[in-house]
Image (spheres, rainbow, N blue to C red):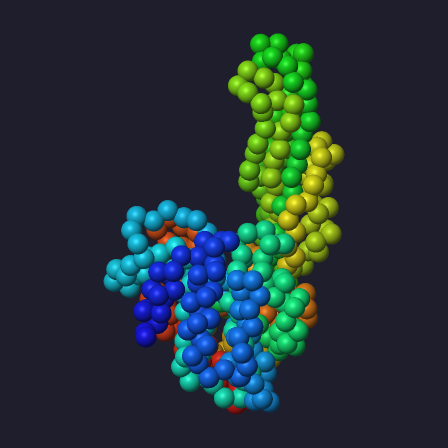
Length: 353
């Protein structure tokens, strides 16, 4: 099948987060018919596919998540001109499409290749199945480099930003809203914090000549018992995004500093950042293989999990980044062949080397 047909096939199998089993089954069944270096290894709704071994060259891992977020679409998966519309078309079934192509076309010589298709990336850090896959599959921890095929418009995106979610709880005392002086309004207590957040400006976080923006935002709010009751609790979710020059410990302190002891702070989801490693030989070789640009990855991705194991990891994929999580999400079919050509050039280059 062509890359466009492969992508449509992937998109026709629903795989909302937590419901990836059907797509995992289909991909595993399809790849079992290929000549593999070893049997496919399955962990939950995630699979590790050893394509080639014994080359004497670097061990390259190509990774992509099977799950997609729940979005609204006006019609089933379809192709209209150069666009393919479907949930996850850009994020990141376009990347999975290239992984299938690498497996089903001629595998470049001189490299050991492994594909990792995994579940639950779009949810909390602790529920992402790549974590247990890496913990159980020891061969992956010996990889030379990992490329996560997240949507990047065929640009090489280095490193990744870290992310912290914190629940900030304000406490008060209930009263009838006709007599608010008899209570203590927890919602009103948040006013000073919300004002400080509105005045924050991004802080530059630079590493290896690449610039990330450190930001803190309120993203969700909840509280109150009824329309005529003064709320005794009010909770904000603060999301702190930070570059690889900022440690998790410093990021947590940044959140505490902006809250200023005015409320309780509970850190509920912590995802570390990852360094760019732009001068690593395998990363530099990819940069010279036809990528459209080199830039920092402002968002968090699973390159951080590999980086924590001491494995160089980068983001590169053909999906249209701006379409990720959008209503009527689409991606450009013309970018698939461009992305595949970059991967093929890179694998051939590092294999021959």
